Amino acid sequence: MSQAELSDTVVALPDLPQATAETATTREALTAKIVATKTAKGLSWAELADAVGQSTVWTTAALLGQMQMNEEEAKAAATLLDLDPFEAKLLATCPYRGSLSQDVPTDALVYRFYEIVQVYGTTLKAVIEEEFGDGIMSAIDFNMDIERVPDPNGDRVKVTMNGKFLPYKRY
Image 1 (cartoon, rainbow, N blue to C red):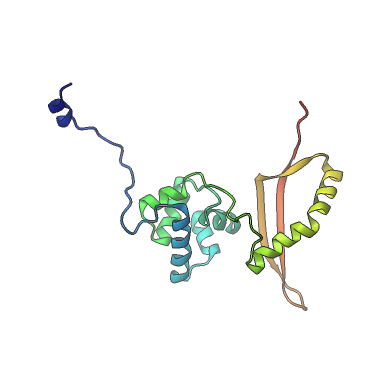
Image 2 (image 1 turned 180 degrees about the horizontal axis):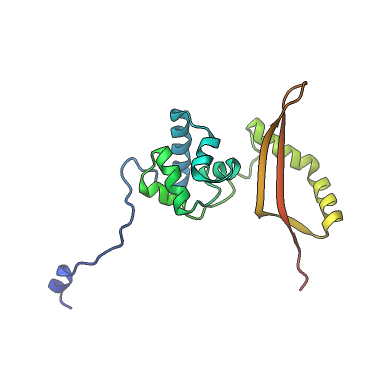
C-alpha cells in the first residue's frame, strides 16, 4: 500500500472514554477527587454504598482504590460523584492493592490497627493455627463489617473480619 493510500485509510476505533483537562488520570488522583467531591457534596460512605449496591466497607475500599468495581457499580458511583466516563472506567480497572507505604502509619486510627497486629499478630496466628491448622485467612474470599456498639462508658467500635481459611498445600 502506498503512502497516499495509507493516509486515506480510516481506522475505526472503539468508542473509548476520553480524558479531559479536569479528568483524574491516575488512580491516586481519582481517589483524591472522590474524597474531595464526597466532602463537598456532604455524602456519606453509606450513601455511596447504597447507590453502588455493595456494603459500606467494600464500597469505601473500592472508592479509595483497593477494590475493582464492575461497570454498573462504577457508573452508579460516577453519577453521585460527578465523575466522567474515563474516571468511571478507572473505578472498574484492577487496582494496585496496598494503600499504605512500608513505613509505620502516622494516622492515629490506622496506627491502632497496625499496633493491634504488632501486639496480637502472633496470638492471632497461634489461635487460628491451633483451630484450623497451618494456613492463612483469605483477604480475597473475605468480608468485613464495622458497627457502633453503645456502651455507658463510651461507644465501642466492633470490627468483624470473616475470611475463608486457606490451608497451605503440601507438594
